Length: 266
Length: 341
Ligand code: HEM
Image 1 (cartoon, rainbow over the protein chains, first blue to last red):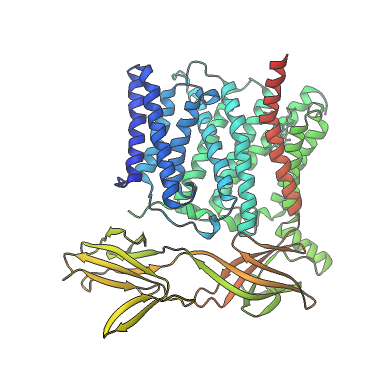
Image 2 (cartoon, rainbow over the protein chains, first blue to last red; image 1 turned 45 degrees about the horizontal axis):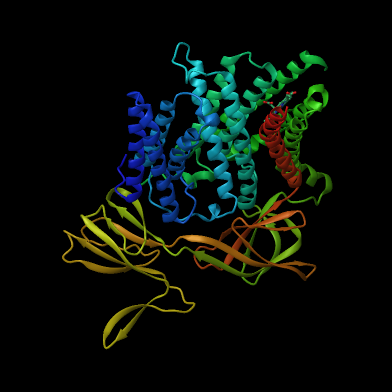
């Protein structure tokens, strides 16, 4: 774990500070100030993404540092934007934002690398963007489901119910499908096979199938079996984590997607 | 199977199959790509996939409620097409048809061609001849394109390796002998010239290539600050007392083969094949795969059969179209009609 003593690092820490302050104000119930401070934090996080984009000359979604940086700006932004993502307490969203930026700020290496030939394709950006958007909705669904699963735990907001989880999944699942399909098309163009049974592909297939399973339980049994449905959405969330982190970081799963395996040399 | 009971049974079968495949995927992630590919090409796993595709299609045909819901139809027909296309394009189906017709399509193979050479013999990854193509390819030219900035590979004591971007003007602390390194200048075609008996380094314009990097080194253990030119594949030891080396490395942005495709000795297509941009001809995709890293004299092209590919692509379109229609446009449409009424 290292501090980043660059302008990039400074922007990430400033955004994190904004989120932490907003959380603290929320805890103090100073609600009229929370929005302003949170919005400033998000604006700084977006500036960090923009700076990275300018600095490297490519969309910042090539390695784990960039993915976490983007999610650390986009997740709070989409939650802040309201609508469906306003479900539940804002405090939990702030914590997620802090955790995402913490990983970008302290865990992953930010040294810019040139894009390897495999990533210089017009399908790279749409594939990763679709997945990023899917992860934002499905991570939120996973969190709501966790609170639904723990009996007696404070619920994720007052109006918590299975309907909200379903709405989040029906937004995230088509994005995930498109991410999968675009990735498959890109793999065919770059490597010759649209599916190589690579560990990362298999983790992402497992996540896709689990969400499909959830949708079928929902379509077949309506409001019945809420714990099974919550369990499946939570399992999907764990499989997303495995796709994103475990498959990239563990030496157990070496494969075609190792370009994302830039853990840092320090 | 009619009525809500039948629907529930089919749904249960669907959920069971979906979760079984999810479990299988997690298990396969631990096996690695090669073993999984072998399993997937085996009869029992093929049967499971066929059951999956057919049951999703059968559910759409036999459950009355789904018949009026075109987007759900599209999703499941899409899935069926993807599975069918993947099966037709699989290793085992190619083997089967090759046995059946003697000279069926090759599934996958490599062409190693030197500049100026024309070839139609396909070999496997271990060099065995797999067959001949009904057309041949001539390699007219092969090029490697590098990025503007390369990187410096620092190997410090204990075998630790650090990679630093070779951006001109950047300073880096080095983990050997308390040194700092500054990137002064990069050369595309480094030459030494003597003027008035003084040696000067120049970057000679023109097509020649001798990449190099000028670095400045400062440190307590060095007698004085020094400037050094480093080259690819020539590790440099900045301090004789320290077990530490620096090496300049250029980064490959892309590599491309200019090819001519010939049928019966007649040139039909002139094209460039590069990473991510294959050539498509007569049921094959031809990819830029690898090259001669030392002298750039030959190129390795990968040839993959397209059998079943169109079905897979149509499946993708149906699957994504159905999802967007069912989950997004359907919701919008319902909201719009609710607003109007
Ligand atoms: C990965 C594979 C699959 C995907 C992605 C998928 C996707 C979907 C989706 C998105 C829905 C609509 C759910 C909703 O309205 O919330 C659905 C419904 C349905 N699926 Fe699948 N499905 C898959 C496999 C299967 C299989 C294998 C079967 C059959 C055995 C099946 C049978 C059904 C049925 C019967 C419905 C209900 C239609 C209705 O509501 O009338 N699906 N599926």
